[in-house]
Amino acid sequence: MSPSPFSQEIVDAVLRHMNGDHSDDNLLIARAFVSPDAETATMTGLNRNGGTWLVTSPGGASEAMIPWSAPVTERADIRREVVVLYDAACERLGVTPRPH
Image (cartoon, rainbow, N blue to C red):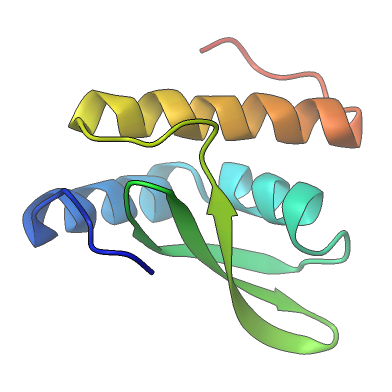
């Protein structure tokens, strides 16, 4: 993973938020972009190019980097790109997205 433009403090805050408040979204994103049979997904990192998730499926666990739609350089960009991934995952899986 390339160097992050964000401090460790920002990355840790995003990971706490995603894993604490949006675990269902993590799983939806993992099922759409990593493995349709994913059982769990935990966001483990991010950088300007994408987010990294630890995805567990019946075949085992592996880390996967899912690219953003555009490079992120500001903290607000992270939220925008996670929403883009969430919306794309909903579309790919035929799930009605919740309002943002």
